[in-house]
Amino acid sequence: QQATIMAREYARNALKEIHSSKDAFRKLISGGTPIEPFDAMNPPKSQLGGIISFLAERTAEGNVSEVSDTPDGAVFVFVRKRTLPDAGEFVSKKIFMASLYEKMKRNSANLNFQRWLQSQCRQYPQQER
Image 1 (cartoon, one colour):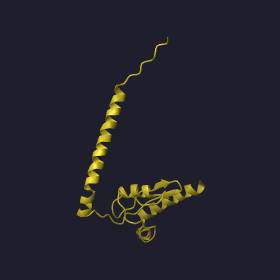
Image 2: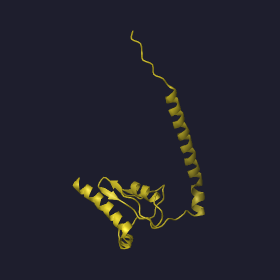
Image 3: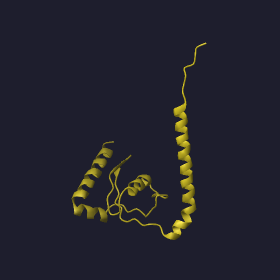
């Protein structure tokens, strides 16, 4: 547990150094563990893939993310480049994305109805017999 705390502290200190020094930023770009390009529907296939995807989605191109704690320490990512899908790729995924969007809307409407229904219910104490 002490090692995890030290790793998290090291990551936070490294991020502070990166923000304050161009040399540290260059060192980060040249070092680190490269990750193969991925998209939001297919995050990296590693133990930290979900966290990496989450951080990358919220970080602008050419910037470093905030530090995120992991079970074994902490992680942050540098987003080197973002690429938009080409038109052919968009067309091939359009039907899937439209059905996913419709499913999300249905689930949201159902959840809102369930919440409304619960808010309208009253519980009355049962009378003793």
